[in-house]
Length: 86
Image (cartoon, rainbow, N blue to C red; front, side):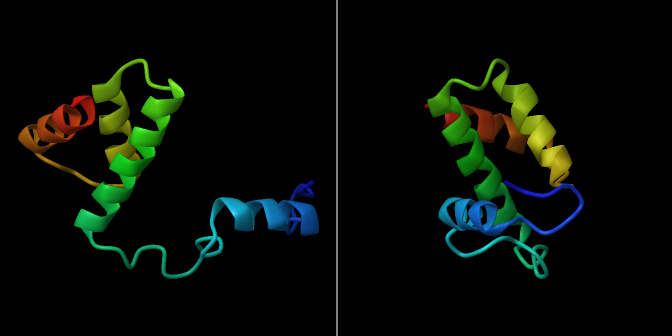
């Protein structure tokens, strides 16, 4: 279990490595271009859809893009939403 305010213990670190086989994202996490970042967000939302964790798809897409500091035109957001609904 992770200790508050400190590094994760060995069990937590092992769980993180299973979830993110390339290791946790630390330095260099802003190296991806916008297209790669959008692709990553779309992949995350696809997983959320499969798990039934999406009640308002467009709102989720907009929120994730905002969280990722990606400002896309409405037409592009519409395209992303449509691709996720297909």
